[in-house]
Amino acid sequence: MTSIALCRRNIFIGGAATAAMTALASVSASVSAWADEPPDDYCQQTLKFDLFSCDISKLAAKKAVHPVVYKFAELESEEAHAIAGVLLKTGASTPERPDTLSQTVETLKRMDPGPAFDLAYIEHQIDNHKSLLKVQKREVDDASPQGVQKTVATVLVPLIASHLDMLHTAHTDLAF
Image (cartoon, rainbow, N blue to C red; front, side, top):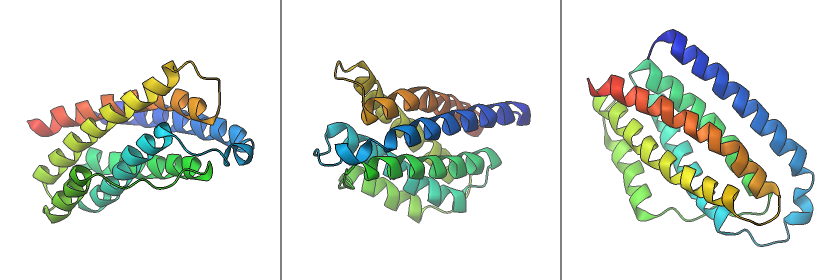
């Protein structure tokens, strides 16, 4: 990925993240009334993938050797942390991490820094982002009325899609 392409993507993603956080802040005032409702599958599924992404991104920010992987890991850990914060403030609880995701974290922890780690991180992020995108699209397409969840999902769909573009480009760069 060229530095110009990376810069353009960072500007786009930064703008999208700013818009997302602004939109989320505006609806967070209504969260207290909503907090008495039990969190549903949307929050649990989103948090499951989001917190996993945050954890492996924090790890990648320490271990990545490719500059694009490092920059993505930093960006992703910050965004995932912010999104989790919003959902947790709605009354959602931290979901239990499935064994497969826990095993992935442990595998990445055991890997040495280097191209193999970078590629494994990117591949896991691609899979995770695809799963997270499905959850968000399902919420956006749901006929239920507007609310915090739908707002979060609506903002996240294009953000996740742009992350997938970045991840696929990084994967192509690393695979050669």
